[in-house]
Length: 186
Image (cartoon, rainbow, N blue to C red; front, side, top):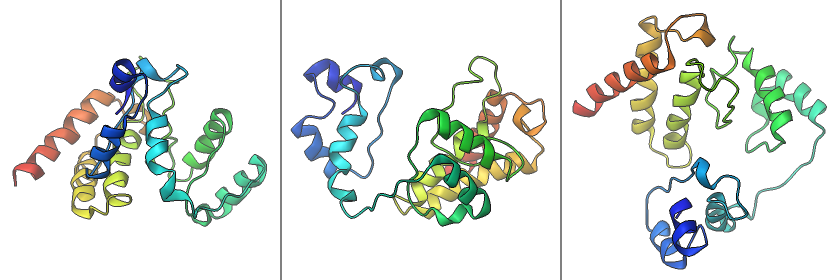
């Protein structure tokens, strides 16, 4: 499944791959090479998930009301919030001040604004992996194996520029990976 399937079969998800995915514990996909074409990798994922969300209820709101609701009571949205990139960026920045830094909270929002600068929100980029382990896969120990090293890095004083420090995202990533390896070996 994914971009290589588009290249080989003209579709992001073949019936054979679908059968294998249904028997797998996890499916990861994506790639910038296939992100702009008429056929994209996420279309295969949508085919997998369509049945699983049939009971999800949709609710339409104006972005202004979402902004007010989220800042007053961010936990009231128990599910998925879908919006355009522009409004998503605004809401992400607005809610980012709650923990005192935009991009510190785990998020699957891939904002490319700081590309090439070496300071893209490393903790906010790493922590969604823990969310994936914890919530859809119900793997709390694996989630802790990601969260723990992040906590060690923060407790050790590592701060990228988004948190007022001068550590690069690569240095933060290396420190987190080093701690993860300790957990894996234990």
